[in-house]
Length: 152
Image (cartoon, rainbow, N blue to C red):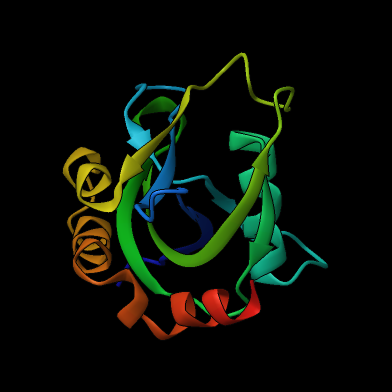
């Protein structure tokens, strides 16, 4: 059995003033397709803290990140020279307080708010798309999202 690499992702979310639930997505640097801010785990950092760093670096998102995952998905990451590795990505929801206008990867990526259903349609990974589709139906039914509502 091939080794599966571990990655972490932030799922940046917000409620608009009119009460709509939205998900922040960024474009990948290589293909330009819409993805969640994600990356490798970081030595000396809790996985959720690494996901929070990815959200800041890739999307300029600042807010509160859950210490619990909302789900996970797998995908095949293309590395150099045609080599690829299977990755399992743990997804940490993040309630976004604000977006920075100046952030580390702003010249390399676009960012945009989508409805959860709209985000699900743009995601290539079936497991992540399924997670977003579930969130689109009833975001407040997810225990982790409910915790954010209590905290805010």
